[in-house]
Amino acid sequence: MTWTPAGNFLLGQPIAERSAIKRHDTGTIVPCKDPDYGAGEFVYMKGVASCAIRNWVTLNYDDGTVTRLAANAIGSCAVAMSTTTASYWGWFQIAGKAIGSCLTLFADNARVYITGTAGSVDDTSVAGDYVWGALGASLTVVSSGVADFELNRPYVADRVSIIS
Image (cartoon, rainbow, N blue to C red; front, side, top):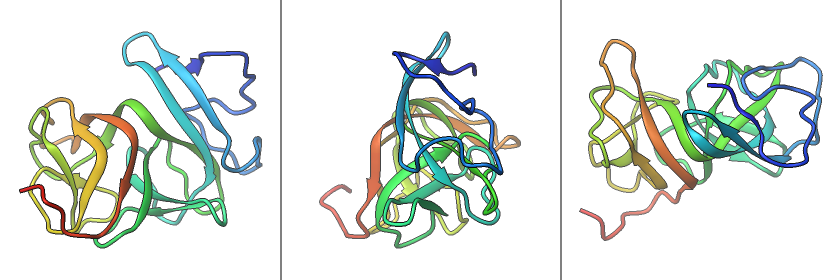
């Protein structure tokens, strides 16, 4: 994917790269476009240990860091655009079509749930761990462990919903 700014914004750090030097204000949100994936939005944050490209994360706006998505999480979610470990800053996708980590075959148009594997999601229902604002957008190939998702500022609330 080749994400470029969709407006009058100069990127000091490309969307798909990480940096040991902070190049934008933490929490900066930039709209971008890609010739194949269309429009998307990205937020600039500091990474966390073991955060790999395409991992799902929870955004911690209070200190500008992320946490790999795990069971019972609460807060806004995103997908890492690079391997952004604790010593690096990078971009995390919050809207548009994204490629994210998942455990197994992921059904097109399926609901998204947190799994027991940090940074990954699945389409198998888990009470309280539904990811609001995210939807499966393709079938994954099991060996690659990724799928396309549609994101619209996803979040988790750690509560049982009326969705069954």
